[in-house]
Image (cartoon, rainbow, N blue to C red; front, side, top):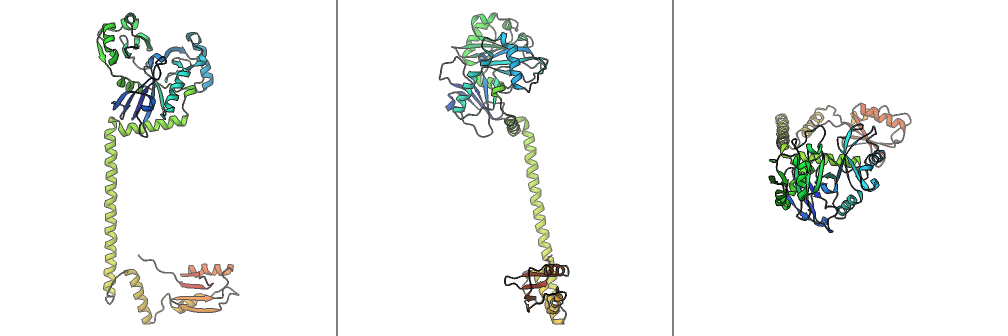
Length: 417
């Protein structure tokens, strides 16, 4: 899926601080990366998800046993978390923001992420002022799920991040009971249990700015990991720090999930063959519709040709054929008149229809015009007249009122085949 991934500056960074960003179109490769102020961050097209990454030094992690409390009751749940963490926190819980692990269950231990609420609000406000809407908030590093094997099963996965002025060491994995440890990258860091219990052959993933420092202090192999690639990995987590006062509405989450799913199907490499299949199916259907339409036009043209041939064979005296069905009816009516047979539009046939007029309805004028019998002086608003017109329709006669109040009676025209 297409995403703009942003990492907020550290809480103690000098202001104005630049934001690290990584832009991806498929969720797997970085298309653009760098550092910029919020107003200068890349402008994305519609459908691109914006992910805010909270840097590791800005978060603390705590493992607490959750009581039997509804996780849907946000107000009560936050009060419970504040009570559970009160003795572990240096700041007033009212000034902090909590976020539960995605696999948290009532009555079981769960990881809780904690950061300053006012700091997080200020970061979101900076992005809002730059007209950037945040869709997800995730941690730079997160504890492993209890049901998933932890990375670094023989110790920890070590990351050296930050800058030369503010280097940090992050450890995740088994030696941390699946949690996250973030400490300054100083000489004493090499003596940490998370480092000493990690096999010496296991490399440290270091960003370019602290690559040499990590190699000198930790005395182990160092593998280069670009900051943009680390942000891309962070965005793949199922953790969401947008909880409690920073939570999105259910409708927003549903829309974001649908948009993310569509973006994944549209851009992700693993869906390439599915996209090809849909394209082939659509093209095949369009081709089939075109063939069907061409065949229908050919059948219609053939039918019209047959009708024209029948007309020419039956009435060879007609030199030009424009509308064969209409001309055929006209010729048949002409032959009927010549033979003395009554046609549906003959005066005698139409006059017979006048028989049965309702009592009290006597036409003042009767005329015969263009195979239509015209009656004047009838009451168009009388209910018996309407019933009589309905009876005429059942007998094959059409009747309608003209603007001058006269009733026209004519045979119902035959439909052309």
